[in-house]
Length: 480
Image (cartoon, rainbow, N blue to C red; front, side):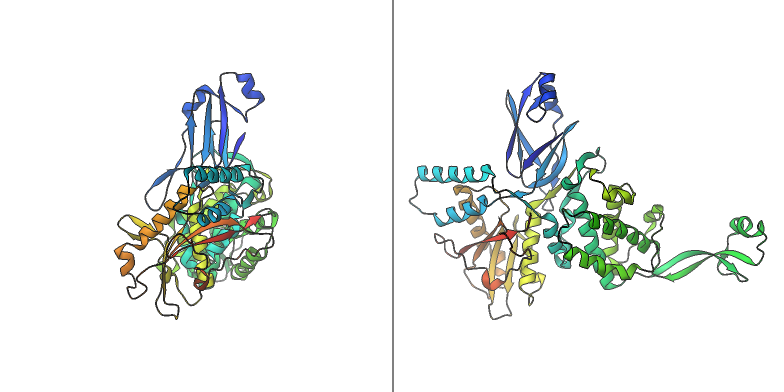
């Protein structure tokens, strides 16, 4: 039995000792003695802080579950799990627009209260909720090697925990891993498959090569009167190595899953292009490989993508229990997992910057620029072009806003711009550094999913009550 939550939306369970009542309506009731077994998992981010994936408040008669900035599936108690969906409506973006346009010095507390209540009603109503297309976002992120290398801490998986039975549409973990693997494999193919020495066993006629396998030679040839044949083992230098065979095996699982999953891969153009790009490179590579050889792989710094691809490949095979027929099943099981959505949103914006500014490299955007315990999402420095611009950018993946939070976000980003280390980065550029807050909003019907953020267009939406502080809503792709 799952308890379905949306990001930042609370869910209330009534506490009781009546077992019959619980059995009739598990969605609304929870047994009192099970409260002690609730232990929310903590997600340790790359900045060193650990956040609870969900939280709860306990009173005498009820428990209120609250989702936060993570989406995923995890056990709540022994036989019930919590599922947080990546839902988004127009409420947060509308509230940001409305509040930022009304930031005035003489606004009264009553007016602030009325404004916040109006915003809360629009968000909690949830009539316009749409599911964010996490896979489309990941495809954009993984399209840039400079951005893809930051995805290692996006995901938390507990492979040791008991698996949770779910429907395939609830399973974000599998398509997430598959997209990441295929994009890594695309990078490997673009660079060229790694060649290495590997052992080949062959029954040769009238010749000997390498080492004779005496035991097998007796069984297969001597006992069968094949005296001209010799079973030999020798080394070959080429691409048909154990590493590439393993990648081919996982690739076959991935293609089978994509072909049979129309929910997450409704538009197969992008992922289909990746699959077709990879296929020719593995045509002459076998797919039979002993999983025991994975323990003995040695990784070259030049082929650094192999290590991550093999790691993700192991996760995918484990997810399908090494059985390719499970890629077509509707009812599946998954280990508990969580995805860090603020981090995902940051990287999605990063990909948009690179898409929209082909003349700039990743270094121009100074992702996660850190100083004195502060960490800026982006410090854009463009010294060489005619624009010669410098901007402090802070992404805010918030699905609920009020008047005070808007003020807090503006003060935070303005504080970043006053740091000496920020001002000393490309010091010739503008003494007063513009500040930009980027927030999510749902894409409109028919709106293209590819994100493209040109620096020339970033500073078009000023927050009038502040000097050189700007705002920008980014459309997130949605599942219809």
